[in-house]
Image 1 (cartoon, helix red, strand yellow):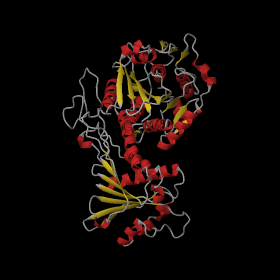
Image 2 (cartoon, rainbow, N blue to C red):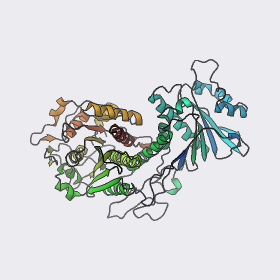
Image 3 (cartoon, rainbow, N blue to C red):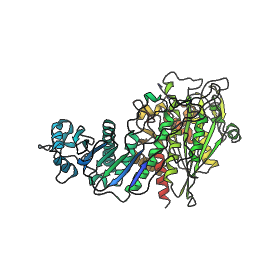
Image 4 (tube, rainbow, N blue to C red):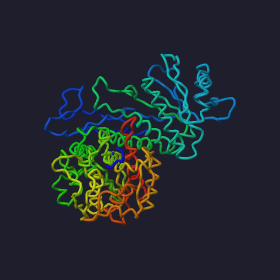
Length: 581
């Protein structure tokens, strides 16, 4: 990975994700056991001095049940362990009388029962609430006496309009932030959430709300001692969603959200994991566990160095020469069981579990180079989600050429010439432009050996992309307009932000070598474009193919791994599957 200034074992005895059919849907996971020689429950996995770690623990999913209900119970009879959030439509920002609770609404009836305390709080906090014109505007949590004990209550605005899918997703995100905040502050066991029908009736509303809620509930305690573990949602068991009008796809929307969250959570776990735990061996073990726990929907094959050498994967193996462990070329295949697949897709993720830069060693931010496998996190995360969503018409191949980019007496050197599996020769000008070398052979494998009809790769590839798009937006390079449009819509639908970038063929000259077919590095400017042009040479020019550079959004300095790409890729597969019907 080139920067300008810087670069689960799932328990086989239980399902990683259980869902109850009907009006009650639940996201639960068994507590994972410690692996790799941990001696007690207050330790995280360890291993012997001589042997690399071979397993990675995963974080348990939130054990919360989402229930759809038509009518609120008598909340005044509820006691400790209960909290309620009233979701409301905001008012006119210029209204002189301020925001007023609507007659006959659940929040108005509740307010009347408690002597107008909610309306009083709105007026007291009018400067901050601002008539609820902005999604997320809320009042402080109120403690109200009930027949049993104390009930916690709050009110949150969902904004003023839901005319576009973007409005709905913004409202859902704001409400999810409010409700998780209330959960952590009140330590409630049951949260009651009322939804205005203008919001809840939208077909995207519930999936967006549940997906964002579960995403915000992600907690990673795997590398903390028990005394320092954080359990902000340990008390929460149920979230009741109330509305007079839910769409016909309401239950399916929650199921989809739960599946997508499983993939995102796995992606976060992988990217958060330190490189002494997540390495090529433990990543391949994780892939095998995904297959084992999939009920036969996923099959796993792992190619070692000998199998890769037989296929002529000289670009990938050249990088892997510096790895502590043997390279692991991971191939997961999703195959629908009920029908013959009508379409074959491939998702390829960059899998550098640690990138020191090789002999062109990094001079800054090396401690963050554990996230250089973010593409593989998105790939395996989407594989998990797809195994839960079970698209009926599409075969999907998930590929990761896993290795490390390190320094030893065998590591590739600047000036080496490598031969990729399609016969093209590559002069290595910079050993820190290694990700594209591993991807090259994986793309040839997807194209030639598997015959995938469409291919997408995800990679934390260049700092140049971050300079162009910042740390929240991925760059997409493809010369196929239909694929670009589909990926853009999937990006918008999932919130994994992306932007199409130019494939400027005039920059191809920057990759010319005096002694080989090409170099692995272009000039000083347009580095993200030349990286995409390099990768394009390893896929048939007539085949729909896209490269997604996720170097920016894969990591947040505030929260760590973001899980970027897992939802977007799962959504892309489901979209492709729907188009076959």
